[in-house]
Image (cartoon, rainbow, N blue to C red):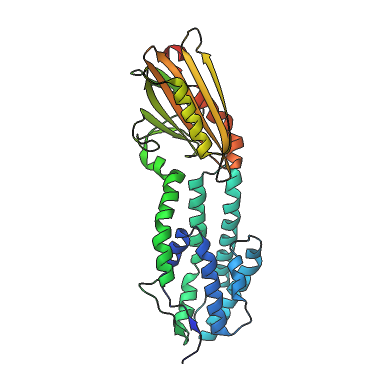
Length: 343
């Protein structure tokens, strides 16, 4: 009938799951709004759909809103004579979603990496959408008209997917997926990596470091690359020859840090390596990147009259992980030594 309310056309739940992942869970708020709106249209109950946009965003309302959501679904199923879940299954769904909601907040304070946090959010989204088939069945059974979709998506959803899918791939890649895929060798706590060809060594302070393929963090010109602290840190090793101007190189690194870090502050020190007149240059720049604390550190050691080894190190974890792993990160980077000094 012309002018009658419409409900959303049923579609595979994984489509909604992908949309929620593409938008880093923001679509979940839209899905809840649309679901409650359709439940209201089917059962003609007093619900306020727009308020459900805020339920996934603010943690506390979940504990009050989800029981109401379940009750509304059951009432619609009874009206349409649809077989419903058992009470026990509903309680299991409710408990799992609430528990995962708590976990997504707690992991940040428990030292989880960005990639681990994103993975848990994906599990949380999947838990939410496990009730999606019930919503779909209500929509399909209802005599109300259905909205028009184009290949299971609306035009707006197609636009969002085309824009956000590459963005999600970018976030996942630079949250640590690149290091996992590119891993070459893992290191034990306290293990020393020695490079006899270029006469230097590096000691890894904990068990979160591994060597990755060249090009993972550099433009491909590095000698070698290492990833650590659940991909919140990396070290890139370069060889600099006698043609390099140490002063210009150091200043360039400092300028780069002031461009990449917010509220950056840098300090430089120069000294001689133990029992020799070979130079060691250390630059430590601290600031923030997208609100999280960050360190960019440069260690330059003179191997001989014709060669320097440079370590560019980057550390950008969450606030909690920064306090927990800062000393370990610095200890690893500062362990860069000529082999003759490390023995």
